[in-house]
Image (cartoon, rainbow, N blue to C red; front, side, top):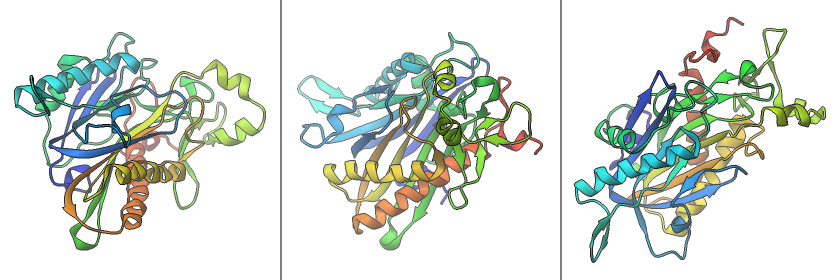
Length: 322
């Protein structure tokens, strides 16, 4: 076990990282196919191929999930993932050949680094070439390269976000894991204590301000000045056997992990999206899987912050001398 989403058999993870442009993308490959669902809880999402994941639609399985920076421009990187899969004969079977199914979600990171740096077809393809089932790099890599949190007072008072992953092994050999990219408008908190570990930095003190308290103080006009799009996006995966209805419910249930770790979450300034994947045939009660999913999401969010580093003038939590 690597304490990563790659602990779910059949999953490979690959990153493309642009440290100069401060952006990137991450691909979660499941080439044998995975039953997939999605839950969108933020008001400003940027997505692709999410509608077909809902129950009642004919396509049952996906072959990869793409998470990308670059705002809506970054959705182009999914074309590179499709190219990679098509070359290997992986995709949904049609009379004219395979069509890879690659849902995607993006985050807004063009306010850090170069606005013209955004992942495209080539970068998505490179992420696939780098994919493996080994240990997963965390922090300011892949889609987490340009992620930031705590932006109520703008980027000048923000803290660095990033990418994190975590897993749990349950009874009967069931594994539940998550990979999350944290680019939230609000603050990241320690789930058990509620202590802010990354967020809006106080202009005149060595501490964080509470975004929730700032909202309560009728500071909405100030927030609107800096309300560039934000988001927490990610993937929950398990080797438990789930139906399409159940895997969509798992995506919704896993959002509890975001609520435990980000305050406030899923605001009108966020585009929070969680995908869920079911690979394998192991059986376990759904609530056990759902409970673990919320826990690994919360852990992955914390790890994204603790593994992040200072980039583009935005300090990481671990570099703040408080």
